[in-house]
Length: 364
Image (cartoon, rainbow, N blue to C red; front, side):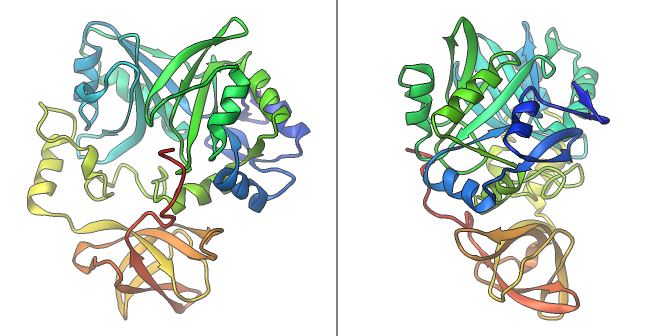
C-alpha cells in the first residue's frame, strides 16, 4: 500500500483515527507519537503495557535442505544454537566485516524466519539472493504480513486475555497459535528492555488484534518513545550506532560473533580485530551537565577530540541526557569524564556501564 510516495502499514487508518502524528520513516508513514504524548506512552511501557506497530520491519523466510548451511555462512552467530521454537539475535556482515544489518532469526518447523530492519530490507534481499549458492529457498513475505509489539510488565496478562489462553514463553522463545481461524506467530522478544511479545500475522488479522488490544486498555506508542526506550537499554539503532563501516566487534557485539564456526562472511576481518584489537569502541554515557546530546556532536577528553555521538536523548527515567557514541578505544574506561561539545560549549558527562536502566521486567 502506497500513500504520497510512502508505504503504509495495514494499521495506517487506525493510527489516523487515534490522532497519531505520522512521519516518514524507512520508506513508510509511521506514527511518531499519539495524542496523550510521549511521557504517557513511556509510562505505559515501563509500568503497565503499550504496543507498537512495527509492520515496517522486513520478514524473510529461508527453507530447504541447505537453509542451515546458508545461514551459517551468511551470519556471524551460530545458527546451530537455535533450537526449534527459539530465536536468536544475529548480524549479517559485508566482506569487510561491516554490519549490513542486525536481525532476529526464528526457527519454526525446520524453517527460519528473519526479521530485518525496514531501512535495509531491499539491500538485504539483494544481498541474500546474491550469496545463495546453496540448495535453499528464500521467500520475501513483508507485503503479506504485519507485526505488532506488545511491551510492558503487564503484557503477558493482556496477551492472555487477547487469545484466551496463558502464554508461558521464556525469553527469546516463540510459538504459533490459532485465533479466529487465523494462525499467528507470537515471540517473547522486543526492543524496549521490558517483558514483551511480538505478534506476527496476516495483514487481515493484525488490525483486528490491535483494536482488541485497545479495548483491553493497551496504550498505542510511537517511534519517539521507542527510541528513548531502546537507548536506555543500549540497544543499537541501524544507521546511527551501527552501519556497514562498523563491525560487530567495534559495536560491542562480540558476544554474538562465533569465530569458532566454519567460514562466514567477514570472518577474516573480525578474527584480526579480535586478535589485534580495535581503534574505536561504542560507549554509553550520561550527562552531568544539563543538556541533551545529539547525533553528530563531538566527544572530547578535556581538549582532545576522541569521538562522536551516534545517538542521544533525554532519559525520562533518569531525567538527564544520555547517549551512545564511538571513541578511541585507548580512551575507554568506565566512569571516565568526557565532554560533549554543544554549540561551542563543552558539557560534562561520564562513561557508564550499560544499560542505563538497571531494573526491568524483561525476564519476568
